[in-house]
Length: 463
Image (tube, rainbow, N blue to C red):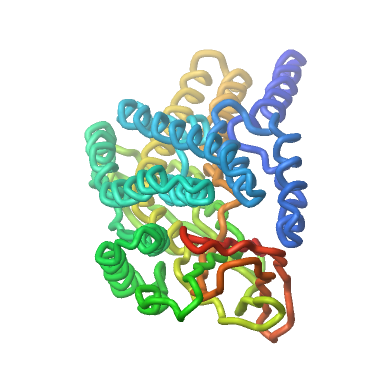
């Protein structure tokens, strides 16, 4: 091979090594974060994220704001958390509007290179945590605004992708309809529970009863997301000399995204797709195959691509209990599985992402192969090989799965209903493992219980 081609090969390799990483988000900012969360050191986790701000490129500003805003909430810095989460919500809305307007053009763009628009479950729960912030600040009206936004977003969670699906289908050469997945996440028991607390604190028991019915309905229609706790006692008057005190516990680790690998082999007028996915014990296993019509495609091409999938990380917690003034109180009961909501919401756009990626991979792959052949015919074998390398680098780099997702949402929400006398109480929440051993004690210290208001207590164990 001529020397100048060797030099060009070296330059291309260096460019790929230095530039390809900018297409996806680094995860170096999260190294050691799980250990910090496990011991409740949210201040150190926040410092780590802020010190690694440079690892979030401009297209991932929303991701940074979500990570920062969640840690600020756990630290009790509610005003700062709302500023971060509000900016993240605006960023997610703007990015999604742009994705709709981009339409068919985005068939040729991997999500990695686009501004992060957030996972659908993040767009819902950002309002849950803004509501929690406002409740901590005794700003009930603002909290109600956030709760209404939860309902509004859930109602359009599925339909907002229909227009995108139509644009994809009109532009793609695939002889396959672009579909939107069914929405199994239609009601947030956690959102309804927050609304119930406000109504009860304001003495509006009829409205609180409506929220209770909606929670019960969520338990019936989506039991994997809202496993359900019997909240009937929430509407009953407290014992004499006591007030109702709701406790919300957030546990476990947010789900992450991992890559499943697929191979495409073209046949006459159709493509054959075989997939693999990670085994729990490591390595890859075959995950099924399918054939999709593609009129006009020629046989003999083979391409590889990746798709993201949601992987739940769950929690080590088997049970938890409240301790009040040194005495063991009630057990915590499950209210909502945020990780199952994330999985359900992800399924809505999964069929779109699949076909979009297949269409893009085949279109770009064939174009690259044809460019290589044309270069060979025009300049000979060496230059054609160089052109093929350039095209192959572009295709392989651009088809890495988009694995961006916020790190600091919890996996599950639990609750307990307390009745305490007004005044100061020592509160702790103890988290137990499967064998009954104590995993963590969240010592909340002296908590003032007021005669009026919500008196909401929060506890966190993100492990």
